[in-house]
Length: 233
Image (cartoon, rainbow, N blue to C red; front, side):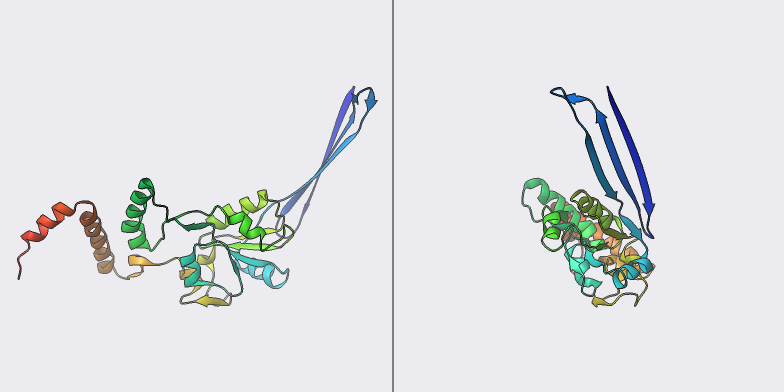
């Protein structure tokens, strides 16, 4: 005969719920001998905090800030003394499919929104491991909160147990809340390209320019014919 008992204990901290699972298996036999097996597992959930709570984690609990944004946003503005390991890196692959996708991206998203053409960083977890032990307290930040959440999932699977994420990202940070480095405020680091031009007229002009650029890029022969129709004067 064999019996199984399982007890689950939960306890809460200010920022997370942790689960302590203790499974005990009794009875049974192996080669005629009774055996006992115990399994102990601890799973700590990722902490999701707002900007004020994030500041407290840094100042009081000693969390290190890990910025997972791409290089361009990081250079525009970042929290002083933070670490930088991008979750996505610039995609410079030159296979035919990637070249087409990059051209489409650069002619629209890149020009209009200032977004670089990227791909997942295959060395992300390894790069983090080279700088932080699994016991380190790490606060993950990005611009909107999506990349930091994805990074937290990767690090959680890699065995990191003290991970926190700033919800809504740096775009929700008020000016002066953190000491920062860069040419703009933290909340504006994601803004670039033609969308930074203010006013309805500029927005319409930006859209026209993007459309014209796309037309010239993909229909060069037709564009040349249209230009020939324009009077020289």
